[in-house]
Length: 203
Length: 203
DNA sequence: GTAAACCGACTGTCTGGTCGGTTTTTCATA
DNA sequence: TATGAAAAACCGACCAGACAGTCGGTTTAC
Image 1 (cartoon, rainbow over the protein chains, first blue to last red):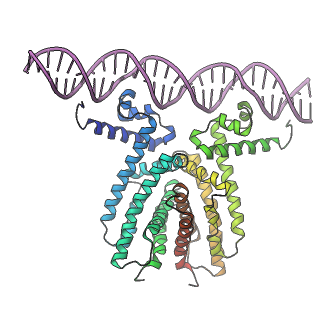
Image 2: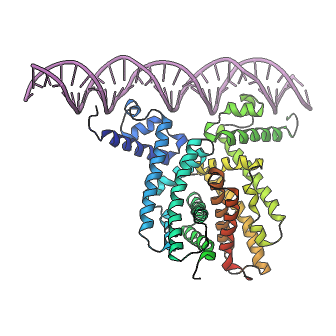
Image 3: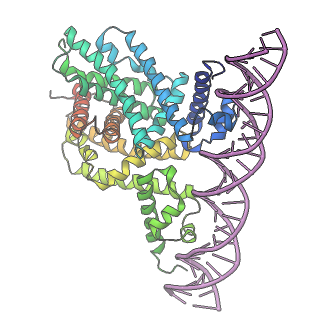
């Protein structure tokens, strides 16, 4: 019987947080279980009590993080009312003062490189994308319902918009010397506005 | 004295090719020197004669591949004359029958995840991007000179276009069930055409 | 003969997972 | 409330496999 009912949840998030920090700082390939143990303040055996294997832990960590970041972007988007404004509401992606992002970008790159060879990570990537798409699709449908937009395929367009965000963000994060924040902000706005122009009812 | 003058070059490309195939198939983190030795038909000592360390070999392999793919895209683009056509000439990126791409995508994801933690790989990524940008910039400058385009910043716009390609391609490759080739082709065209519309002289 | 090219057994290190043991908590019972 | 058995939580030494790099020796080319 459990000591404290919430203990398992507490320990698990403690371990997952430690794993995320360590993976983001060093890359998944350079992280050992000992590293995570130290970061989590637990012993090897203690950690094994909660996660069967390194693989299990890593997958759980990635899933947990992308869930968190999704909920956050959902909130940010819902703070905006105008559908077009919602589509453009992800400029917080380009703010490195945000601690989530310093974890999020390395993690995303790790997931992508893993997804190229591992079905489970492909699934994690897929789910993450789908979350974004559902959000953007919501804004597009709202715009259609309000009569701001016309004739667009919400899902396909949502995927395109999200791909534009990702493409711009990748460059901005990995090669900041050549891709300033100004460039990133201007780029995604111009690209998304250009993409949406044919679908606007009031030009 | 060298046995055959060209031997070193032959062996090196032989090893690099083997490394690229193996890395692309398994991911850089899952490749051992023995794997590459087998793929290259050389022994450990033989391989060591040409590359000091795993690190050296991997970096050389990545560089070699991105060089190759750059020359190829250069040729493809120069086969098109119209500047706007040149900007849209990278649809071969969305053809998985192409053996280069089955190597290229996994490699690109590996480089990005490595670049997040290693300066040398950041440089490789940077150089690769720059090659693309120079190509696209050329097309944009040509369009300006010919009077097809106006008022655009060639470098910034080239970077945006290249980011659109990359964002779309990433989705298409890693999550093909939700991102069909049709979607990819339509997406990048719509996004790039939308981006370019304000800069066109003849609408 | 000599140097480059190549071989493959060996070594030292790293690391994930295991496992016997210890501490802590719970709870039934007196 | 005291007690003690049982379960959960946790520890860390240990093991076995994997792997990069080395090195003495062999083959090949000139």
